[in-house]
Length: 204
Ligand SMILES: Nc1ncnc2c1ncn2[C@@H]1O[C@H](COP(=O)(O)OP(=O)(O)O)[C@@H](O)[C@H]1O
Ligand SMILES: [Mg+2]
Image (cartoon, rainbow, N blue to C red; front, side, top):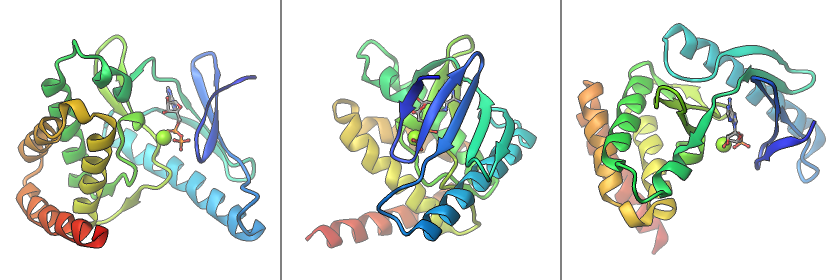
């Protein structure tokens, strides 16, 4: 099987309509730490995918996982990453960005923090056009406003670098959708301003 993608974390293989995501050993990490980290992330990704399916949130269906082989088998989502879609000029980014924000609002409503919100971790489904989220290995459950604000902050940063030509409008649309979906959004957005100030001060 040839890998479909080789991320920082894992090797991704496609087999018919499934994706196999395997977390490989990292030579630079202490072997025991490396083992427990990969095991933790494999279990975490599987657990969050199960929870999302219960919530009927658009994410891949989990077929199986093994914390010995450090692998997850899930449905292949046909389509393009939002990174690709948003880099094509002819696309209506406002509509898509708003949908991204609504989906993040749903995650945060369920106290799920994604922790790696980039447009490479979102796929627009071919048939329905629906935005589907992937890559939940760093996700966790938290009620904290701070954790939700940091989640949005990382997306803000990622959009600024990956989609500079439609930034900041693209992030403003995300926040629009987020506020429509999530009743506690205003608290998170006030905290986001503090997080951004903190980020700026750190750079100096
Ligand atoms: N279920 C899936 N369906 C379609 N493509 C996928 C799926 N899972 C991963 N991919 C593709 O593989 C890439 C890397 O997978 P990801 O889970 O994000 O791993 P990493 O932790 O290495 O970023 C994604 O950006 C996407 O292009
Ligand atoms: Mg990824």
